[in-house]
Image (tube, rainbow, N blue to C red; front, side, top):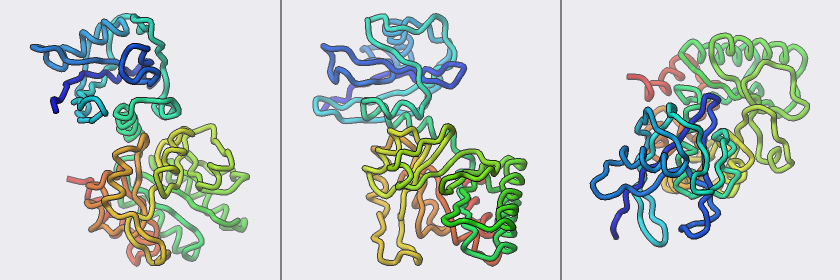
Length: 329
């Protein structure tokens, strides 16, 4: 089958919104939203086609185009090789020159619309940029260890360079422990580490960067005003989280775990298949050791989440450093 080259622009305004356009009647996949672009003509380079297509479709003159991703995607009628470019500088006012609808949306708003599947993979890739870096997430559960050991492990993980914590409170905590957790949240934010609260309603007034929801909270209709992620276990839950506006999904279990020995792990193959179709970044959770981080990333994970491997480690600093080494030179 002939592979058709296509140049596509991910046009971003000064507020971080992306431009998408609606495919009109008379073209393949009418009624689906997409990033603007089109076929590369014979004798053109992809970037030349990008400049031409964005002028013809949305009336802008591209001043700078940064190569972003190249993706082969097979539709029923043909296979296309999509050359995606980030476009942040242009002249002109973007509009539908061919009469098509256009919208400016934040990346996490796009999956709520009916979009071309290949374009949703780029939405996930853009959302990866909003994740903490390195994308190692500590799931900090204060019920797992005594308060002093918990605080020590958290602080040692920060000292090792951790940039992301999900504070998971499955049950209420007493006043003394609540003060400790509030202090740890504040310390983390002051150090530049993101803190996302996984807590039942009502939410405590602790400093945080975002929320992390359970699947039951999402299904109950909880939609935080700010950034949020969701715990997921299958394709349907990932799709639901993406349509709700989640920034990422924790997908578990990738490997078998001691805490849930009877739960069948997804395995690398299934995880990779889910990552291929996800509109949001997937963070691998479950049975992960430092040695398994490369396998998780090779399966399409945008990051990994760790619980007992850090909080219950005898040396949390070294344990965190071992996980972080994957992202360090």
